[in-house]
Length: 188
Image 1 (spheres, rainbow, N blue to C red):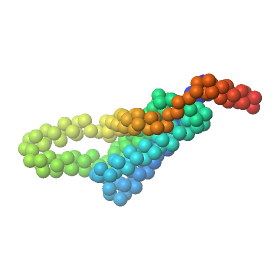
Image 2 (image 1 turned 45 degrees about the vertical axis):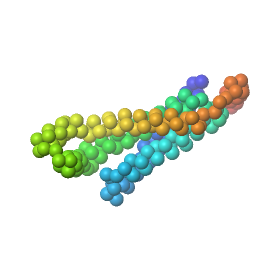
Image 3 (image 1 turned 120 degrees about the vertical axis):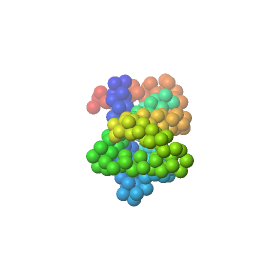
Image 4 (image 1 turned 90 degrees about the vertical axis):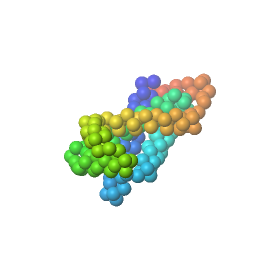
């Protein structure tokens, strides 16, 4: 069991790193193409996350669990992969907003202000809303929100993915396969 637990964490950290780096690469490419304020961007990034959750969970199922995985274990695997990806993306977001593109927050505030003017809000309401937004949107709070957001969405995606990846096992066959695997490892 200890070996299985170690494989669980190793698998999830590796695939979380793959997902995090893939999301960062996509974000950087879209930044240089100046495509940032678009629903397509968010959908594409979540597709990357879903793809890595599927691949990572299947990999864990095949390598550590002899092709048998319960719904709960698949859900935990997908959620943990998302968590590790979110930590990497959050670190990138913090560094990007704090040191690389320090004007990105100013651009975000300008876009918000324009949208509020388009809605016909009075100037005093716009000023108050922007002031409150500036207090609560710092690079740190955005990074923290990124961790919660990606982990939450990864959990939701994993709820669905796990239903398709899980495989009901014959507990006797699964136990015997685990014993045989442990015996092979001990004899090496």
